[in-house]
Image (tube, rainbow, N blue to C red; front, side, top):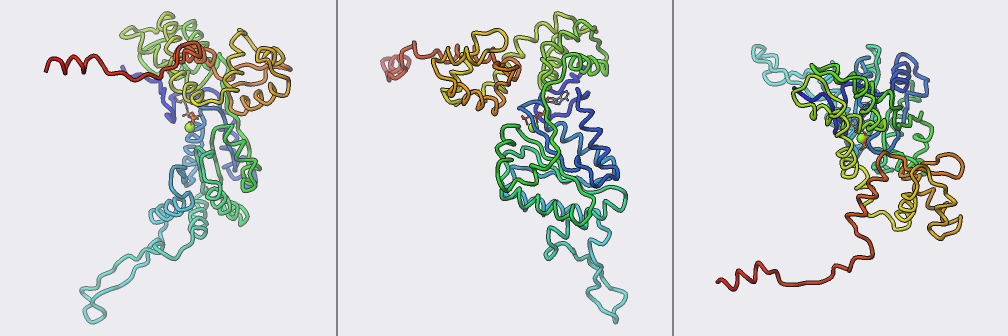
Length: 393
Ligand SMILES: Nc1ncnc2c1ncn2[C@@H]1O[C@H](COP(=O)(O)OP(=O)(O)OP(=O)(O)O)[C@@H](O)[C@H]1O
Ligand SMILES: [Mg+2]
């Protein structure tokens, strides 16, 4: 039986936990509300919170309403160049006037053998601005418009992005039906917004994604299973929600593992769910925390490790004491770690880890990196296997 969960980045799940408010207001904004703020939206959040999925859903909503969607890929060498290619390509497909009929060959005398050939109007001279305006108008004619979307905004070259947003703003200014959605890692977006050239993004409507509540996570898992021949009881669904911590990536991962653990059984049992906790922790370590902790500055790591002594939120004053540092030092690292989505404020004078299982990941990391007590690994020696081989010969 096919596993209905989608535990991979960018994969749209069967059932969406939360996000209805953002999707409904975006849909409303597209329906004949040109001035509405949500027509320029910026989605931000930590890794694995569902930014790409939300962006994709918004694109689907737009398409269903007859909008043209151009998604720009930040990996393209030039964002503006890619936009130009995409819009021309799309126009060639949808514009009834994309090509002019030109009569060639023969001439009047040989009327029987007149050949017509289509000449591409968009081959050379049309500017990107004109092409975008044309596509927006065509889509607008049938009640839609033109949506530009960019994922991983934090990795975009700022000059390229400024060029694209300038084109977009010109379309807004001239009353064309257009919308823009960008998505990216929160820390990267904050850094980007500080730059002069990002004025447009600063004014965009912000959608901040995080974890969903545990009940919603449990219901998402239940609903996903309900679409298959299997069942999951309320207790097992609640436990799955708890293990997922409401973190979107884990909702899919825990669901997928529990589904698999149940093998041929008709029902996913409590035990099938309970067994997912260990692999969820390892999975988070490999895919989310491991990469974030790799190459982390020693000062930040020391701060995180100082938090390990507490079971719940840590007192920042106490962390300062543990580190043997003053308040100023502590607060600099506190701020940096919050910016990187590793910790978050938990009431006045307290912080906690912001994504699930970071504590476990730090502990796993300690085992992998045995710390300063073990002798430095700096020797070079000949291997026994090769010397034995040499002796035999
Ligand atoms: N609202 C949701 N409900 C349930 N599962 C979700 C939801 N949003 C995303 N997911 C799942 O979470 C995982 C991560 O989603 P996605 O790739 O959109 O995250 P992201 O924020 O774009 O991550 P990254 O920062 O790596 O780009 C996927 O497995 C996806 O199916
Ligand atoms: Mg993504």
